[in-house]
Amino acid sequence: MPDNAPMENTENLSTSRLADAWAQLQAHARSGTPLEAEAYRLAFADPEFLLRRETRGLRMQLEMLKPDLEQQKLGIDNTIVVFGSARFLSPEQAEQDLQQALASGQAKSIEQARRQVRNSLYYAQAREFARLVARHSKDCAPDQRLVICTGGGPGIMEAANRGAHDEGMPNVGLNIALPHEQGANPYITQALNFKFHYFAMRKMHFMMRAKALVAFPGGFGTLDELFEVLTLVQTRKAKPVPILLYASDYWKKLLSFDALLEAGAISSEDLSLFHYVDDPQEAWQRIKDFYRL
Image (cartoon, rainbow, N blue to C red; front, side, top):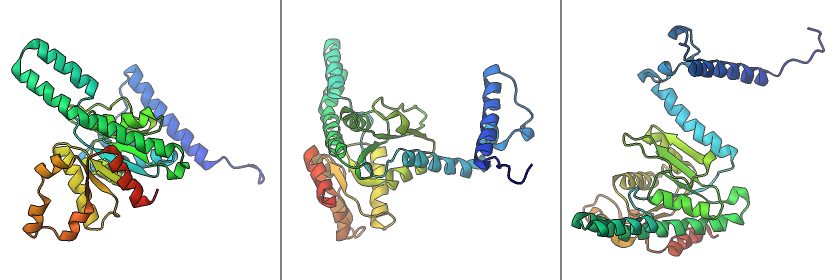
C-alpha cells in the first residue's frame, strides 16, 4: 500500500464484519440449515452460549445497555414514572363488561364488573395526568421535556401511555417477560418499547431518568416498585424526587406508615418522602412546584 493511501475506517470495517456475521446467522435460521458445531460459532451469534447460566452477567449488562443507548439516541433525558395495577380497565371496556354481566344474570360476574367500573376511574385519572405532563412538554426544549414512562403493560400503565399518546408525545414502556405473558399496550412509542427478563434491570431503568414517580392503586407489583423507590431515596442511593401516592383513601387503608413510625421502624422525616394526591391536576401541580416549572 502506498504511504499516502487512505486507510479503511476501522469502525466501518468492524461494523461490516459484524453485519456479515449476523446476516449469516439469519440465513441459517431462514433456511433451516443447522449451525456449525457449537465451539466454532461466533460467541455473540451462539444463542445456546448466551443463555447459559455462566453468561447471566452478560445478559444483565445487555439489558442495562440497550434501553439506555436507545433512549439516549432519542433524547429521552427526564421521565415521569407511573405505576399502578395492570388489572384496571378503561371506562369504556368496564361499562361494556358490566352490560354483558347484567345480561348474563350471574351475581358474581355482575359484582366483579361493577368493581371494575369503580376502578376504571383510576384509569381515566392516570390518562388525564399523563395528558397534563405531555401537554406541558410540547412547548419545552427537547432536553427539558418530561416523558411519561410506565411498565408497558395494560391497566394503569396503558392509561398513562395513552394519555401521552393522546397529545402526540413520545412515551416509554419498560415491559417484563412473565409466565403469563404481559403484552405491551398499543400506546407506547414503538422505538421506546423495551422488554426485560430481569426485574432488577427494569427497576434500574425506572429510576435512571425519573424526575417523579406517581403510584396509582395497585397490587404486589406496584407495592414492590413503590418500596424500592422509597428505600433508594431514604438511603440516599437515589436523589430526592416527588413520590406521589394517588388516591389517599386507597393507600391509607392499605398501608399504615404511622404504625411504622410508632414502632420505631422509620423516622418522622421519612414521612416527608412521599405525598398523597387525589386529583390529576393536584399531582401535576406537586411536580411543577418541586421543580418550579
